[in-house]
Image (cartoon, rainbow, N blue to C red):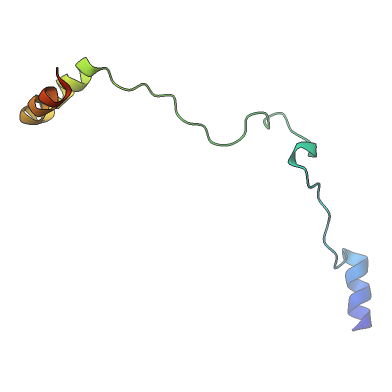
Length: 71
């Protein structure tokens, strides 16, 4: 058993490696400025386009929508 322990100490040790606790202190690479997923930039459709699309799909539902929204 002592021989296995000495071997483990020589190879890499049984102890954990310490890492910096503060995430701001870690070294940053060139692409780390803006990491993580981003929300896609999409605009909501204008009301005219929305009404045209609704009329194509279901004219009666488009009529109900117009009555509800006051258009």
